[in-house]
Length: 320
Image (cartoon, rainbow, N blue to C red; front, side, top):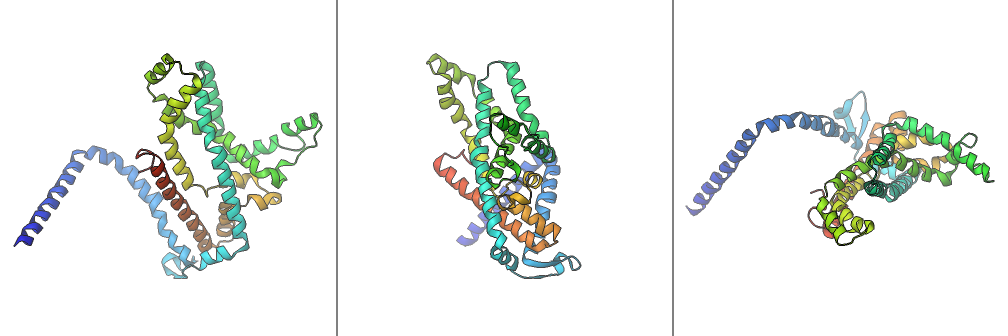
């Protein structure tokens, strides 16, 4: 009898919660309707294509379709890791991504801090506009600009080197320079756009904190160190976590438009490898397996960095 009473109580509580949930949805129906198009877009274009992931475990045949193709287990993953090119593309992808993270991640933070310290509003707006502009240029055009600037015959860099008595350097075909050029050109293109979110975070800091610090005699560096940077830390940690998730995204557009056979050894990454094997050679199952491996590593890194961030900071220093 007692157990029956408890079960009835649980059902009553469950029904009450369900009614409460439906009531809350009904009360905010206008907001849920506004959310519906975005939700449908994400389900259709972000989650819908995941249906095709199964061909990583099949020998995909266009005539038989995804469902009709035969299952082969981990065959394509084993092929990738036993391939001589796998180690090279993994190494290049990781190295380029780590270089981007080390140099490219702090660059917009530093730029935002510097722009914030500029007192002249007109100069500040001009500096921001100039730094944003490269973001709106496609990598096809940006790569052309970089190649022309570094040209051994007409490039401004080599003209300068000649003027000071140094022999021209073939930057775009030199394996010692290519990764540096990739990282530097990536920073040039995105640093201004990346600084926007940090400038927004800085603008939300209460001005009274700076006024109090000035009254206490704090210098610009001290105000930056003890007020501005600590206020930006939650945002910095979130962007770092998201950046770690894409650490294997070494930048297909940029590398595809800038690399050449002379620097293949240091520039061939997972994305360009998948493009050649998957689209050019039509080996869809193999390329899907490689892409799936890359996404799994990205998700694992996000979870690890999220855990570490939670351990080092407080609850607001993380994605969830």
